[in-house]
Image 1 (cartoon, one colour):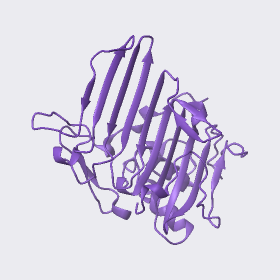
Image 2: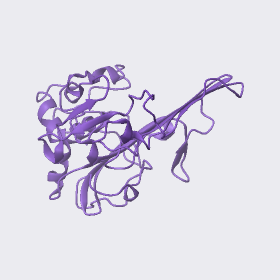
Image 3: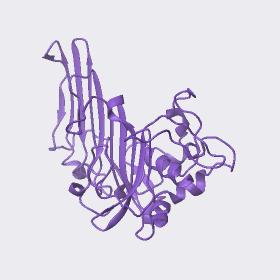
Image 4: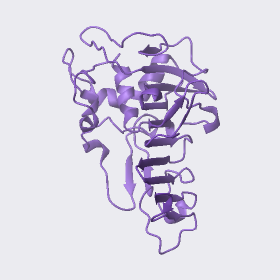
Length: 292
């Protein structure tokens, strides 16, 4: 059961593909491609009760959760859904595992996080949020979507900003490409919209030339009147100052190229040194200590 938490931790912070994007469905629903002979975990959703584990690792976490093994174009993936878009937050991802037994698939998707962040047996805590295993997987082997705010249509299983005053979407629907990030904020008479679509840029490209298909839009309107609209089209010039999205990933020695390094055109961010616990709500009523 440690595999479940390690896989979740690894992908929650940009975890670790080999098939085309059109073959993945990102609608926060169980996959039609589930390997029915493999173990699956569901709780707080689809009629399943509270999440819990075994032995000393007991959890009554109220968050909706699904983890299952799926096969897409002959490749095994661990498919995880955390949260429910109806509640204003949901994250879904597919992370590649090695073909073979179900245990092989889960272990390949979470092995480094498991090895580095395994809490001491019988001791509750947040091991997977504090060790270097987080963010260690190969981003070219993950499909991911996260939504915050917005509106969810259960009948069509679609999410949109709708009339919400805040909505944010992180969408990585192409294995080898970087994500698209969009955000809308409405505050009284002011509306702002941000869109950076990096899906035309691959993880080996850092130069401006590699960003030709990554337009950046940042618009603001006040009482319906444009106030500081900005749109950087794909026609970047030598005068363009762009740092967002300009990074490369170099594969490491871990399974499927995990444990690699990120190099940025400007600035730096060390995923292994980050304290991921600061992103967790400390209220025990919201997030009891979990050791799944």
